[in-house]
Length: 494
Ligand code: ARG
Ligand code: ZN
Image (cartoon, rainbow, N blue to C red):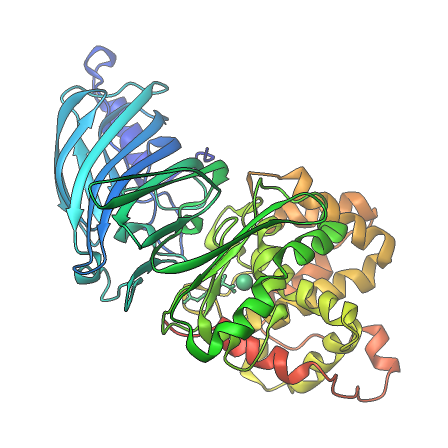
């Protein structure tokens, strides 16, 4: 489900086709990247995945993961070969039933060459049989497979799929998922969507999860370990499934006091963003030592450290806001990260206001005032921060200031119409900042080029918003300490 973009590979493929007689045209290799300038090797060219079926087995004692991925895709070019992004050890690949040759290449490419070239626009079924110990694999010198005392977790951004399933690893190619994982009896396997069934035999329990709405690869998650699972339904009717490691120690109470409010917060966010886009909600708290949280689709990943200072509903609001801003509406390229983080942070400000801990206006004024003009904070452009600054605090805080600036410019009525209309307009798809600007201009009837340029694309502190210029130095809101702590954890290094 991705839009085609011209990558060097696509251009090369086109020129190869021009150079040889049409009758001999047999396709060219698909590009090893989908064409994202921040991450040139991420994703692949030449095909579009519609569904991943993962049937796996995991042994926590040894961190061995084995199984089969069946990928349903459609070619978007004539292909002599194509790539998947993957790190584990592959023993067999089949394309449309026939064995295909395969070879590892680059940092995380698996090049698959079918016996016969694949014509453009045809359905393809790819079966990849594999095994491996994910914790022993790395690319670019890092690993995002998080081992825990009783298992492991796959959750990170933008890289997490390579360690557990072969994919077209970029948000432009969203797909539905069936994730089926067998673990030793007594261990749970947690993933996104709904638990369709569990089966037990020979000392192994198999958990069958289904994500029936399009999902970006980095939003697919897998947690293996010993969990307490809670289930319920929000007042608005959304089924909620949460899971807590049995081993959270002192953080257990604060984790539950926060994540058990998922249903309430999903319903509250629906008031701003429109109907919740998915068939279930929830979160899980594994016993990892990582610091961040991640908006994994329908089942949010929370590090226990998010709750080390006490309950933290703000982070729950942030990750659940992403279900609309980031998960249902995904970015087109990683440069568009503001569409995720600016709005998830702004949702935290709205929640602070709801909790009586400082209004969005007060928080915006405080953030604006707390960074002097020569602070490096203002050199980060939230609209195009660069890969190395993708999760810089400025993407979040300056990003939310840009949202407040939009609100100031177009007024509350148009602003809240945009906030609610956007997730419907691009539901389950992809969009970029230019699309957002066009939509906000359409809804408000105002030209917004200068506003977006000032708040998102200039490496300097914008002039004070009109409202702020009138106000005296804002008092520090009561919630500020907690929000600041949350910020730190949001940009935690892996
Ligand atoms: N989207 C995540 C959040 O703000 C950011 C995670 C970044 N950290 C990382 N280690 N990848 O909720
Ligand atoms: Zn976020």
